Amino acid sequence: MEIEDIALRRLRYQHLAAAPLAEPVDVVRWLTAVQAQDYYGALWSLGQRLKTSDEAQLDAAFNTGAILRTHLLRPTWHFVAPEDIRWLLQLTGPRVHQRCGTGYRQLELDDATRQRCHQIIIQALAGGKHLTRHELGQALVQAGIQHAATGRRLTYIVMSAELDGVLCSGPRRGKQFTYALLEEWVPPAPEKTAVEALAELTRRYFQSHGPATVHDFANWSGLTVGDGRIGLDLVQKELEHTTINEQTYWFSPKIPATRTEPPRAYILSVFDEYFIGYKDRRAIANQQVTTELGNLGNGLTYILVLDGQIIGSCRRTVQSKSVTIEMNNFLPLNPAAKQAVAHAAQQLGKFLDLTVDLTWT
Image 1 (cartoon, helix red, strand yellow):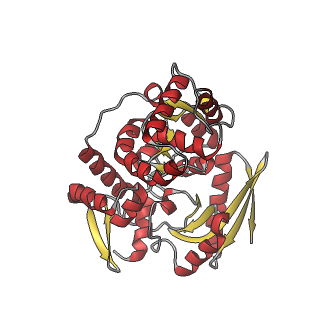
Image 2 (image 1 turned 120 degrees about the horizontal axis):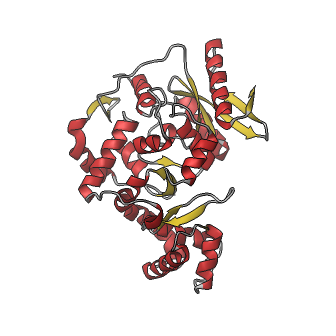
Image 3 (image 1 turned 135 degrees about the horizontal axis):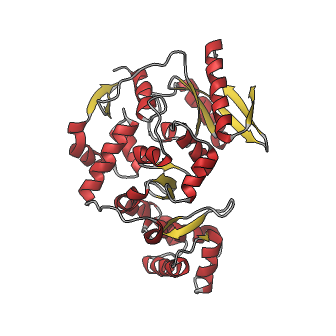
């Protein structure tokens, strides 16, 4: 395997180039966890891996609880399948709590205070209620928790409750997100031991994100590199590996690398698993592109990918009846590549049910 084969395999392993999946939860289950602090960008990430979909369909799946959104793996939101949420939280929650330790101390949220807050939240949500973060803050203040109405302290209280499996996402109320009690909103699922959970997470990551390194897995999962190596020991008989430039990449042997003809382009959220799922991105971006991406900083919201390689960035602006997609290619594009990019833009417009105004900078 050559370094350029890694990107082609990842496209297929992540179901961007392989056969599309049927339902939103199928995508989430395959990828195990999909970073979702940008809710609409994350819906688009799911939509690109489905046979047919639009934003409204995926929003409806979220509102019925077919997919959930909560803090796990790292201190940020992820989509997760209902049957996976408990064992993933049990495995990764302690590490996320550890990473939140400085914030807890700064905000005077010791274990006892957080547990008291959890009980107040349980009482507020009991009986099938779905409350916004603001409403949870009001319940906490009314119960005597100081400085919990808004701001950073409320954020950490709610995240702590998510990590402990007290609450998770509920249906949206208009544009607002709500929370529900996990035990009321999510059906029971078989439990896993700590060893079973680590093996399952490791297996799924390398099957869906491979070829990848143990450092990629540790960075993605929030676990330690040592945990990653233990996980690999548990499942390595199911995987193959190759060494390129002194890096060992692990992957499932079931999916070959293939290049599409004509070239295929993708407009991906900067939080798409194809980009965010790896610590080392040299297989998908050369040094020039890496520098260009770094120069954009927080202005980077979408990336442009052609045959597995990042070739530019883009920005979308949604109006009532149309979406303007502004392309910024870092590398020269031939007519076939530009046609592939235009097709990718039309796919995004179709997903949003909007006409497309494509511009180049």
